[in-house]
Image (cartoon, rainbow over all chains, first blue to last red; front, side):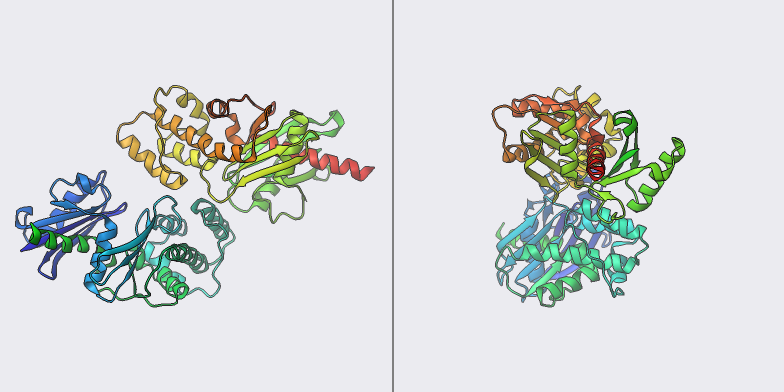
Length: 260
Length: 264
């Protein structure tokens, strides 16, 4: 039997198709004008890779922004639950998940079954979200991944004094106009980002078996800074960090179809 | 000539007073605050000297503003003191100054002698300041000078749920895509500004009778002023001088005062 998971974020839409315990197809696309369109496109793309149609899928769960509006899903669940479930499925040791999305930052505590214990979410302030890095990467003319890799070369990172993304943007422009090396600016940005995320982890009780999910997990600079600030190493994930939410949704799809 | 330069986060404002004609304002100019502040000021001074055929050595320069930190070569004055000095001259008997800056807001309480008795500054989050509206206007493809024009046409101001300027920018695009009226969005955005100012004003505290003056670029907005008046149930005074230049003016006055004291 086949199961589907859809995760609609603010920047990307993700789909995962599973058969038993195996991921047989997946897809990541940039979001379109509305979540319904995004979900239809990413789902079709993932299915078409195996010449499948929605009828071949036994149960499909949707998560993320606008999930209630997705017409073809059987159930919608919170992205908090799905990220926790997905991470735990890949590595049963994981008890805490940091998920930095396009416009939010979540810190999630889960139990050994991947069920939600507690969480904190920031979706009010752009600092510490993917948006912050997107803005900064743009200013430096770098991709999000490059923002990470280039920063690893830095020997003297700049310090950003403001948390607010708007103020920090102005500081970065000032550094750029003073011809400060891109790697040093990038390093300062990644540190500020990691610091903001780390502050969120202080708000709830979290076990040290951490995983980091979402697009920001691909920024090596942020990841390294976070590991230093949290004094731990992130648990490895064998699947693209951006797919964890959709994966969790697909796993929930399986358990819901059994109980159906 | 005395020049007061307010080096803001979005705009650099300069105002020139002529001591020989009773410190009348003889020149005002604005430049974008993009790049090295020192460079912008040098250019500004060169332009003034050239355009008005003045010698740079005859220009006495005072600096204030959020981005004036590293400009130690000039006479520096705090924004607080500059605003108080300006309002003390322009509108004596003012109790409250509400300064809506590009990135930050200040509420200043002034006593009977025109001295600062209390203040509150929001410089942690850009919401409720000029940049919030500026980004929204950019998304709507209108000029910030047009906000009153649109806002007053609104019959149903929309609430902008995002406090963060960056998220508000995206929310507005979403609202447009949903077919909401431009006027209603602009009115809602203006209300976000007054909404952010209200708790700060109430925290500083109003006495029974207050003269309240709005300064800063958005101090020009009649819509924001009226919205604040409605919420405060109190009249607000629009400054006699373009509110954008009040801080620079106060800086010039402060420098003038210092120079005269120096002479004495």
